[in-house]
Image (cartoon, rainbow, N blue to C red; front, top):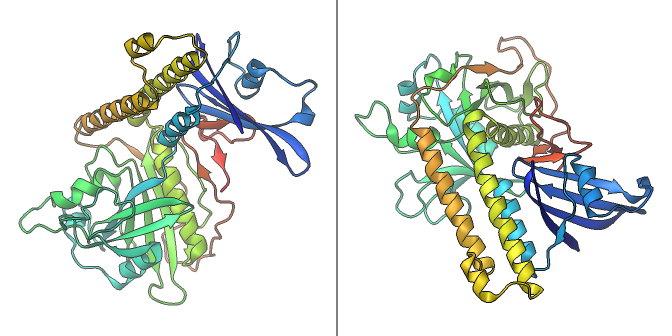
Length: 406
């Protein structure tokens, strides 16, 4: 059972704090989660490490020593957990869409990349490895913006469910091709609005992110096949991202060459998901995300306070209505308004410029033709956006993204 509390800090703003008593093995622990406008702090504290049992303020200071409040107020509203979960689920998405661009040997322009219609045997093999081929008509899973009713975005795509996260891929060769359209806007409309994309290569050919004009694409994972369509298929991997995207794991080994199989699939999908989470820390997305999070947290705080006061008979029903209350339904309406505002802001971001900024490339294996060692994907973990473990989470490029093993 969770206990929930709320307060306001002069510097940190609105706070919503959850704690739970838990027994792990034969040890008693406290699970603590503090939500602020900028991030969430979490920790698991062995009770045996405490000289005396702390009060709620002291518990909050255990996960964030910057907390400076006199007291926290208990949440007494029976439906509070539902509201808090809604806020948490906004922060941690379980749905992802990634672009997959097929780059043939010698292609060096956006027009060439998006005009390719055929798929090589090596690319087909990679797509089969990446996920499940699905028919879009009446598809019931996460569709990633693809049309599952009228067939306007093609007939099939690639989808997978990884660690309870749904992933839909936007495949450049499977999106509709328009004769006479040099830019292939039908294809670019989807891939150009993704944040992370895979670039697949049959052979060693230069890829420069500036080839693709996009305000959203912030990171690319370049995958090159070797010994394709054999029982010894290998994939060489390189990663490139904009300068303001922090490091994201799992780190590439040296050389970054992987044998086709479930270990590499787990590595690649983890890398893609963590890449998207890291991209949200880039300046363009970070400011928007912080405004959205702050607005949602303020709405949550007000709803918890209003309904807790009402449960104690301290607020008249008239006051409740005047202050915009009215139970969980009003929270969800406010939540929808904030999300709609965020979507409009995202559209505005997408129109702000025509070219992306400088990108940098992370370490990668050589793309030469030597006989490589084969990397093993071990110790994979997914980042959790906006959540920082106060003691154990490793900071990613000094931005405070904690890692959580799954």
